[in-house]
Length: 271
Image 1 (tube, helix red, strand yellow):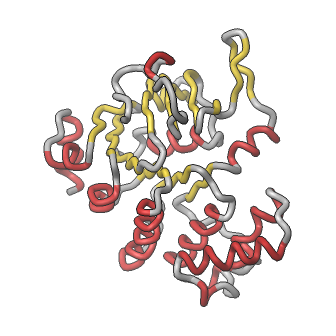
Image 2: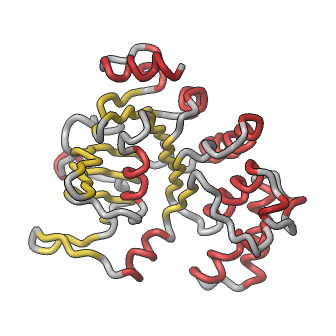
């Protein structure tokens, strides 16, 4: 069961037995100088769930994701992935930042796909997917190659393995980026508006791969403007406004009967 986002997650709220939730935000705040971008986010995502985050530009959606994988450190509150605090340790009630090596090790278990594809332009699709396992995880090149070939097949690009990013369409490049993230065998996948840089006719091929991942049981936190995708694939939808989760429910409830006036206003503009 997913915790309510309107009540801080407390230790006593955790289940008495069984594995921890995959992602837990506990009263997370994030400020950039005087600007408060996240304002007390509480959210729990169980293993295998797909949560889509929607909201207006500048509402804090991408910052949520960047805090989960340690690209940004929360100003206050904590985030846990699979029961492990992200970016910090708590000793005697005080926060202690992880070393760069420790933080990088945490990110290795969390896949992230960005708006821009960020592929290495001088490496083929196959080499892009191999890079992380070889350089970061130390996997032998022959094993990394087999794994990369399997993943490119999975995203429908087996016949593009030897091509460079400039030879691929935007949708193909984004599918390579997804394969690259999966190559590290993450326990969690984060997607930050993965189709926003694509031509409309290319969006479907990327969303198709994401649907397959969801069906395979991958835990996913997805910032998206694709409302149809959120309706069809998400287990829960979070509407974020001004750094707060103001609505959190099933897709049927959020899209069919939103309770917050701000949610109704937003959906009236985008649907």
